[in-house]
Amino acid sequence: DTAVSQTPKYLVTQMGNDKSIKCEQNLGHDTMYWYKQDSKKFLKIMFSYNNKELIINETVPNRFSPKSPDKAHLNLHINSLELGDSAVYFCASSQGTGGAEQYFGPGTRLTVT
Amino acid sequence: GENVEQHPSTLSVQEGDSAVIKCTYSDSASNYFPWYKQELGKGPQLIIDIRSNVGEKKDQRIAVTLNKTAKHFSLHITETQPEDSAVYFCAASGGAGNKLTFGGGTRVLVKP
Image (cartoon, rainbow over all chains, first blue to last red; front, top):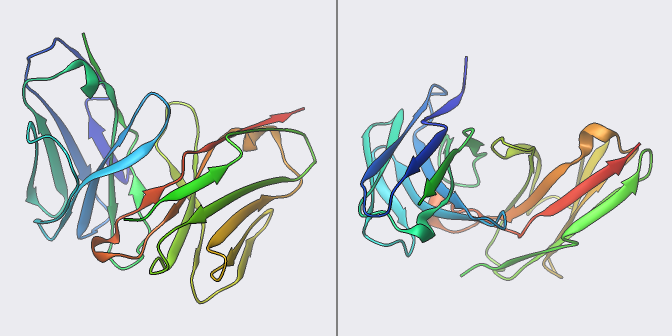
């Protein structure tokens, strides 16, 4: 009965590769998010989708491309991976966008070598 | 944009004592202030939140206060227990899209 799930949990890859992280929520929420947590634990939003429409797009390299096939899924594709992309990526979801509680997934630890 | 500062960055307390974490925010339009607890290897978990029309909120051993005039809010944990050891994050939101801006986190260690 996992609320927000992500796959894979760990991802180790080489520079220059392309990889994807998948996120699914079974809470019936209409809004989903991607956050990046760096090595110093700092959490920063990357993207947000509401009803499959992109509503937040922070200053993120265009090598990162989110895709939302439906309201329950939000995937993150990363092209030409760089060392600096190493981080933990969290997916989250909420119902609505106005001060709504956000529920986080368990995270995907990406290591680029 | 919004900027959230959080202090202290680390906090060590004896079991049974209280712990206080303070945050300040910059955008007066922010109106939602959640607190998250992150245990090792897990995602952040919402533990309590407060909205701008409320000055204080309590949930068992946890309380949060908000001073909108001064633009700061605080988390208070009473009767700390070893399982309270974790990293705690404050955040602020108020703009379009429910964008959360997080503080830098506080690593809390409760010593038995």
